[in-house]
Image (cartoon, rainbow, N blue to C red):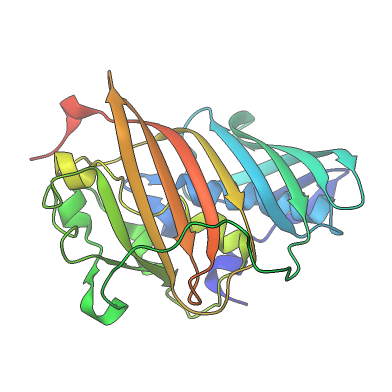
Length: 267
């Protein structure tokens, strides 16, 4: 059992209801990472619809920050189960207050034919020639780096160095657990925000809404991610991302709406 699996483990406590703990090891600053909270909810949904183990399409709305080190409850509902997909819903609560709402389609992403149209990976040096992600560069404490090994493109590793709102790098679980579709969803929300490359030290950039489409099960090894922001207005941004596995196959495409608290940036 890996640290990730252990720290999203839930106990059934009633029909469609599960309880667990929000582990502080996944914090960004004082707040649990949104991708980790989402995986807690997806852990419940996979138990509720066990015939379809893979998240295929996931949309989450973050209502308020999670509480690190505190118990959580996930209330789940199976809206429909078909031959290829289950449509499911979950609410993660702490102290009786909803923290996030999830609507997802779960399926079984068995190996299929080669894609007809697909997005290829960007050029990047191998992981051992890339730079470890740093909390100092982002201006926020990153406890999550005890769980994740993130290596950034050398041209994009320093705050503001890229000169554009883009971040590219490699990612894996630090304890060596191979990636799967659940970890792929986690990885879609654990890179530095793309505006880090343009604005410099931005601190915590909270997600309002995140949608992740998982295209296939990843091969073992590092995943390569690239995330870009092409619109930032009035403190709100849209970030598009993609992840490729060690064979170069596209695994994830994502889009999120997030907040940039420019007035609160540390310098």
